[in-house]
Amino acid sequence: MTATRRTALGALAATLATPALVRAAAIEQSTVEVIGVRDPQLGAQLAVADQFGLFKEQGLEVTIRWTQSAADTLTIMGGGSAAIGVGGSFTQVVFGGQKLPIRTITALADIAETQGFVLSPGVKLASPKELEGKRLAFTQGNSQVVLLAKLADMFGFDQSKITLVNMNQSEGVVAASKGDVHGLLGWQPNLFRLVAMGGTMYCTGGTLYTTGAPQVMPEDRKPLYNHSTLMATNEWIEGKPNTLAALLRALLKATSIINDDRARAMTALQRVLRVDAEALTVMVNANKYALGITPSLVASHKFQSEWAMNIKRIPAAPAPEDCFATRILELVDPALVTWKPAV
Image (cartoon, rainbow, N blue to C red; front, side, top):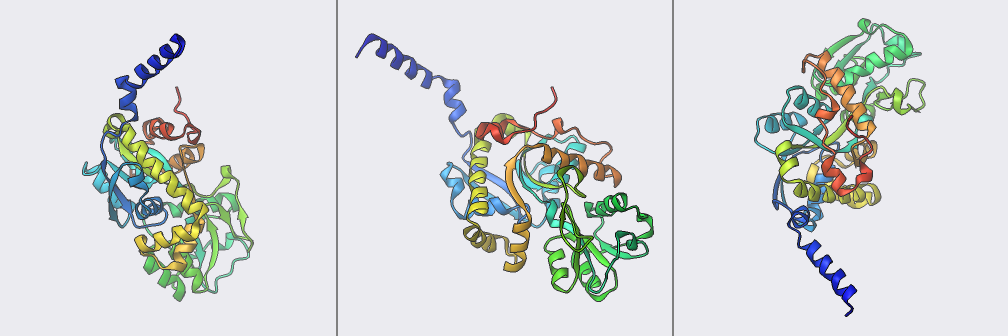
């Protein structure tokens, strides 16, 4: 062995033994609990990763505490009972508005197409202006009602001439199907169920059906913006970055399965999420599953911040820089981070 080669090998061995680099590669904690939601908008990647052992491949023992909605994540993480959980853009807005030390470490999916507006069976409109004088079911505290404001701006009708009737989504489906209201503002699978009863899709977060044919809106003119996200406490982001990065690697692989091997993914989703097959297919197909911290995610944050202030859920809009942590996803794949905090 030449002296030059011995020197090079010695330097390599010393580098590999450097404590800082060893720590950077090591998972700080192998046991992890995640607050999940039994909903293909929020829980799809968790379900697939769990069913196919993807967390174990990363050296993690992950326990998913399944809940019914992102409202549960707000309560559990907001109360300090969990360090990691899924939610929507609105969830992070509330945490940021309350100045809680919780940040989004990645988007999971663009879920705008799962939010929308369906006309009741038999209701036909020559133009959106004919919404004036109509009664629509909605669920208070949810941003689908913003669709009306966007449509009013686009088509020049008076939103104040529409009567909104507050009821839960299942009640709204029944009321619309009976003609007690003229339509339903809501989310999947409720929209699908009303369409299956003879209703007509009129608008989703990304597509207009006002002419009878789908019109996909450009990114800067979408009627509604929303993403599902994975959030973690600042304590974990700062103290256990490699554990969180391992979690994201598993979810990245789960995302690939959902997008590239849909039949295999659907088997797992059906088993875990307990949604009937036909509705599940509609919901999964409407979502755009992708990890990332992107301008589109930030657009959802700003949209939901405006809505949260409108309903007085937060006193002021939290800055994206205070709500997103890019560090963890950059450890996994820097190319997935296309939005950077302002310097």
